[in-house]
Image 1: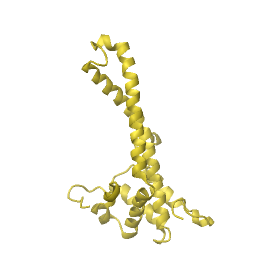
Image 2: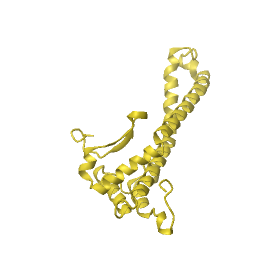
Image 3: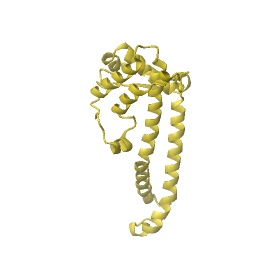
Image 4: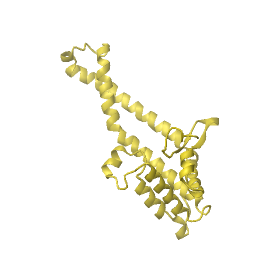
Length: 200
């Protein structure tokens, strides 16, 4: 994808459902990385495809959304019963109750964002692992190649090299660059005669 006319950010992703499903690699990524690094990035994105992360993500976030709307439905009545008269709101059938519902939903969405981020970090970690497994033996020193790809990504995106774990828990939807580099350099089930979890 020609993204360089609009941004210098590096990116690649899997998108689409059914026949429209595809892996997209931005030209900015191709310009900043060498061929083995791009192969690892493509392997990471293949991981999202092979491990069915799109349907799993849709299912997870649809379920989370349903739960949050249910909590909003259950709590707005209680809030209006307690404070509605003082606010001049007659009940749930009053359009004036809509801002109360939206306010409650915004609180629930904020509180649930670490859960969504944790799920996203989990599938990104799985895709990293898949990328390492699928490029093992395909590119020389694939662990070092993956670490270098993450290093380039971190430098271009000006990522915090040592983020606070609380910030990661609350706000990161991808593992931190430092943890991805550490994992890339230490993941080696083959050294003990084993095999990958996803790529046998």
